[in-house]
Image (tube, rainbow, N blue to C red):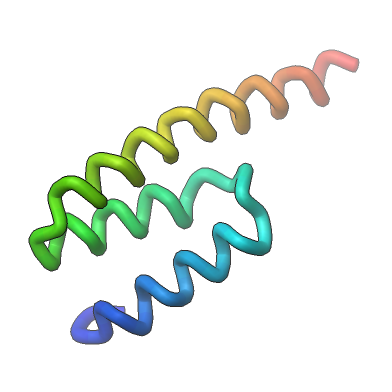
Length: 66
């Protein structure tokens, strides 16, 4: 989505709406916000991604150990 900042932000937010526990849209949204100079938003999305990574990896481990 290089050169399409607004469109990519929209798509990442749509992905988050579809699956709020999926990590990567938060991560990618943070990267995009950083690229366009929105450091506060980038930091917020980075924190959301980190919280979900822990959930995602813990969930994966839980499912493997059942």
